Image (tube, rainbow, N blue to C red; front, side, top):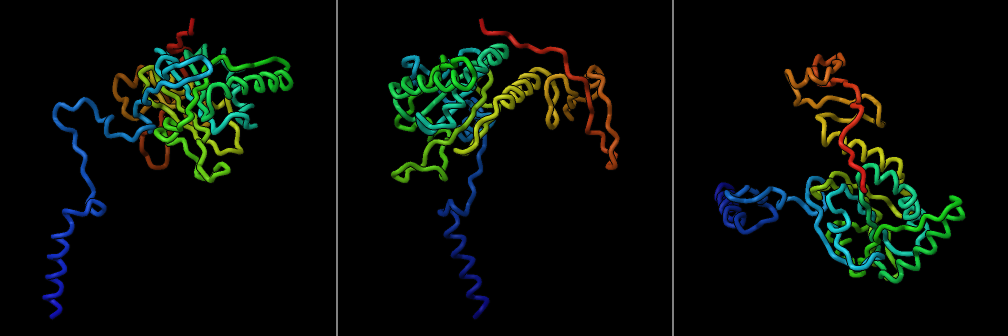
Length: 271
């Protein structure tokens, strides 16, 4: 009868569920003695540690951590050498080098051709910037040769909408900004036809560095000198030290508190 059929169906489900991981979500629990929950994070996501790697580059064989040292770091990825938009970007990165140094930032590029190809590409970049900017900006920072695309795949730098002649997806043009502890603080991913805005990269660097040292957040379109927002978890006497100005809202909730931008925060220049 119908009741018997239902009971048999339920019994079958009980027998199948334990061996079916697709419909039985796995619960992650931090075990006693485990070092960090960072191990459970997906590689390349915000808050995870960017993995180190050693590859040939335009500066010889280098590791990413060696290039970044104790500074903040930016890794720019590119799909291939001798591509038009990437040529403009790598030259612009070199042009902005003094701005990066003022912010204690080391940078590195990555492309999937070999180092010899990179070196020839540098000549084109220098010639382009000479014609366009009136001065050569030949990248002096290392450009890694990810010829086997291992780094590109491990960090999710793949653009399924951008493939080569063989139909293989090319690496995306991605930006990783990491703090001195190599923790990923920001990622940006650009399609093949859209170039990076380096003024925006400097803007977010300023925000990341400020909010790393102060319990503040930066609102939309913020730039250095603009008002900031006090974090909601800063209360009591600690909040009073920031002299916040409460914004009265229809909800009556006191969560939006404006404070003046600090005049300075730690920005040790690279020697």
